[in-house]
Amino acid sequence: MAELDTTRLDTERIPRHVGVIMDGNGRWANQRGLERTAGHAAGEAALYDTALGALDIGLEWLTVFTFSTENWSRSAEEVQFLMLFNEDLLGRRRDDLHERGVRMHFAGDLDDPRIPQSNKDNMREAMELTASNEKLNLVFGFNYGGRSELVRAAAAIARRSVAGELNPDDVDADVFASHLAVPDMPDADLIIRTSGEQRISNFLLWQSAYAEYVFPEILWPDFRRQDLVDCIVEYQARRRRFGRA
Ligand code: FPP
Image: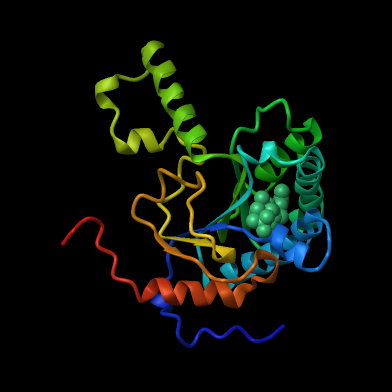
């Protein structure tokens, strides 16, 4: 592993929350004459290395899009692969990430009956096991969609209002955010989408209100921790205005 070059990184201004749309697995596999699923399998090393890089530089929150609410429309084989792969990946990486102080979260509709029960059990166990870790919050957007997250928050607020637990007049942005999938998740500062595609694709719609976007021309399986650092360097060169002049 090459030494991580952080000479251009301003370590005093590390973003708090980075989101990643890990795009390009299918194209990476196609270029090699492999099945698309081989691209997802190769994406695991990229994900693990990026998480270690996040730990190295002291990032607090890393959210990765592993399975979207729209991915159910892919072929049955690909969907089945990703369902099982999520479980396998936890089996391979959970204890190592736990020992490194990573807290794992799964944002998304985990009650969906299409998700195998064993996968749900594994995700809940990983969340419980790592609940008191404080180094890095690693959020898997699994069966995640930004619109679905917003609709579920609105429905939860409506239910609590009807039950008399919440006065609708008290609902402001903070109260709303506390009903999202991971209530203590801060806004995303930087969102990276690999592969050169430039779309939001229903990712972190609420949390990305003032996020900066970086679109490296790297297919996800080729992404490594140095690329994370390089994206953050690019982010640090931007002037964030938050709506101000
Ligand atoms: C997008 O690339 C990638 C995905 C839909 C899945 C991302 C999954 C991983 C990186 C592996 C970890 C997965 C789990 C479930 C833990 P694409 O397939 O859309 O690529 P393409 O645009 O080149 O076709």
